[in-house]
Amino acid sequence: MDSLISAAGRSLAAGDPLGALKLVSLRDDAPSLALRGIAMAQLGQFARAKVLMRGAARGFGTKDPKARARCIVAEAEVALASRDLGWRVAALESARKTLESHGDLANAAHARYLEVRRLLLIGHLDDAERALGKLDATRLNPALRAAHELVVAGIAIRRVRAKDARDALMRAERAAKAAGIPALWAEVDGALRVLNGIAARRIAKGVDQPMKLEDVESLLASKAFVVDACRLVVRQAGVVIPLAKRPVLFTLVRALAEAWPRDVPRDELILRAFRLKLADESHRARLRVEIGRLRRLLRSMADISATPQGFALGVRRTREVVVLVLPVEEEYASVLALLSDGESWSSSALGMALGTSQRTVQRALDELAAAGKVQTFGRGRSRRWLTPPLPGFTTSLLLPAALPIE
Image 1 (tube, rainbow, N blue to C red):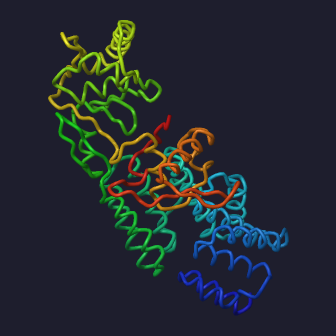
Image 2 (cartoon, rainbow, N blue to C red; image 1 turned 120 degrees about the horizontal axis):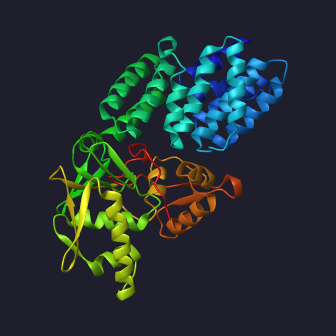
Image 3 (cartoon, rainbow, N blue to C red; image 1 turned 30 degrees about the vertical axis):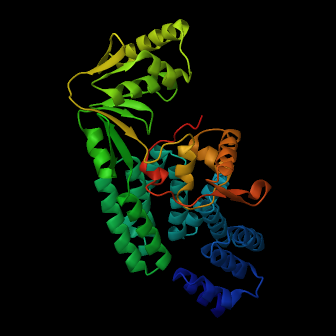
C-alpha cells in the first residue's frame, strides 16, 4: 500500500473526509475509489458513494477478496445511512465471513453491526439481540465499542428500558471520546437528546401529560390499566391483549378509558368506532355486538357495564386507568415518526420498517406532501422523502413496534 493511500485512510479514520479526498481525488485505482467512496459517504453524498464503492469492488475482483469484502461492507453502510433497507443482506453476510476467514475481525464486527442496525430499524428486535450477542465488545476498538453501545441503547429504547439505554449511551460517549471522531460524538449526542425528549403522552381523567421514557417504563411496570395507543394493545400487570388487527375494539376501549370513571354515550361510541355522523338502530345493535366482543377479551382485567346513556369501564385490582399515546397524533403519525430522524427515506424502506406495502406508504406520503408536511427529491428509484423534526416528536426508536397507517 502506498503512502498516499495510507495517509488517506488515516484521515478517514479521524473523520476528515476532505483531507482524504485531497490525497486520492485524482486517482482511479481500486483502493483510491474505495477511499473516495467512504469520503463521499461521510460528506453525505450517498449516491456518488455507492457508485465509487461498486467500482472499487469490481476493481479488486477475485484477486483480493478481503478488499472486495470491505467494499461490500462499506456499500452496505452507505445504504443504511441513506435508509435504503433493501440492500443485499446475503452479500453482506458473505463479506463478513470472508473478512473473518482473513483475520480482519474489526471489519467483520462492523459488518455484524450493520446487520443489527438494519434489524433494529425494521423492528426485528429479537433477531437484533441474537446477532448482537455473537459479538464480544471487550475486544473492539473505541469506535466500534461506541457503535456497539449505540446499538445496545437503541434496542433498550425500543424495549422501553430507560436505565439500560442511558447506561449504554454513557459508555458510548466515553468510547466516542476515546476514538476522537467528531461524527461519532454527534451521533451519541443525538441519541442522548432523543432519550431525554418526550416519548409519549398519558391521558387520565381528562388530563393530558407529556412523558419521558423513564415515565413510560414506570407506567408499564405498574398495576395501572393501560390502553396503549402506541402499540395498539391493552395491558395490566404483565398481561397484554393485542388489538392492532381489531381497530373497532381498540377505538371502543380507548374511548371508555379516556372517559373513566364516567360513561360514554352510545352515539359518541358509534361516531368514534364506526366513523359515522348519524346513528340508527342498526348501528346501536352493531355497537352491542362489538361491546360484547370487547367484554370477552377484557374479562380478566375489566368489566364493561351498560348505563342509561351508554357504557362505562370498570377495572379491577387498580384505581388507575391511563391511555398512552404518541407525542403527536395524526393519521400518518408512524410515517412522520420515522421521517423525524432527519434522514431521507425511500418509500420501500418505509414500507419495510412499518411492515406494510410500498403502495400504502406511497399513498400516505402523497397526502402528507399535499399537506406540506414532507418533502421529496429525486425520481424513480432514487426518490427520497424527508421532513424536518417535529417539535416534541421523538423518533420511532422510542416506540417498540411500528404502527399501522391505515
